[in-house]
Image: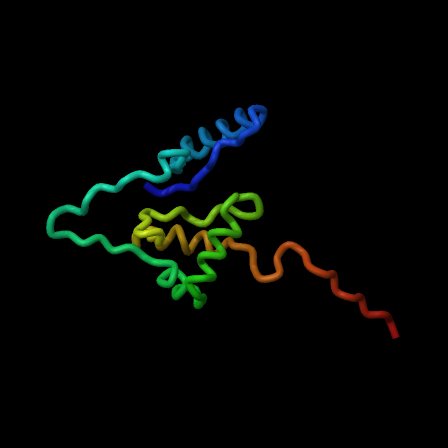
Length: 131
């Protein structure tokens, strides 16, 4: 299952808005991972099959960055306020997240829309005075 971890808000007044957002994602065909559904024990691989998952280092190599940069993307965009959350991992093995290789297009789409370096402000440039 792919999707995003969307924790319910603590404020009861925001609960209706949260539930409407979850319903809208589900209606759009997007999965939503909520609460205890986020972490579940996976089924064993079929006999004779080895499942392969991508690490942060694998994903970072696609974009010419380190696995640590991918971890920072996960942390920086976890709440979905400044940009949509980084795609949730499909598996966690010993604390290390892993993504199915079948999600490559989703991860590339996320990266394509990610704000670039310096996005969101910074110090304004000085205006040149006419000579």
